[in-house]
Image: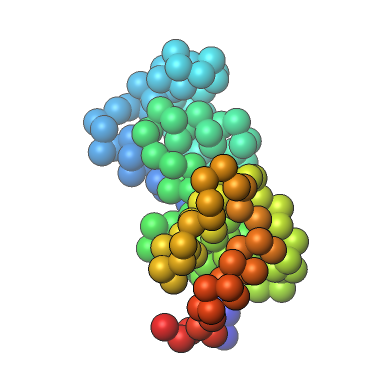
Length: 173
């Protein structure tokens, strides 16, 4: 049986809860948070906007507001958007996943169920791909490519074959 939809963590309810926790931890009033947002990001939030978010009367947060809140509260946006503890999380009105899975998805680490993995892992920045290849290389003790040679997936696969190091199947180590 699914949890009661009204009790599910949602993006906005999670942002509201986390903002309230982090604001209280800093000892800020709602007005002080609003002033920080205005001074640092020219975001016009007053104590009423903050209070309305925290008490559930405000039902949306823009991406710009999410980034500004994360910035003034000194946290990564994912740590406002997704609960820090494992809980069912309603990503969309019709989709719910464990919050740990959603965190990995938001960080670009793992796709959600039903996602085309080839597209998911192909649509990343060059730097993210470099970091992913470096992490795999470290994990399986693979040699780095010669200096000045840009890594790519095909080249890495051929290099692994030449090194005669097969990667274990998923779940094996």
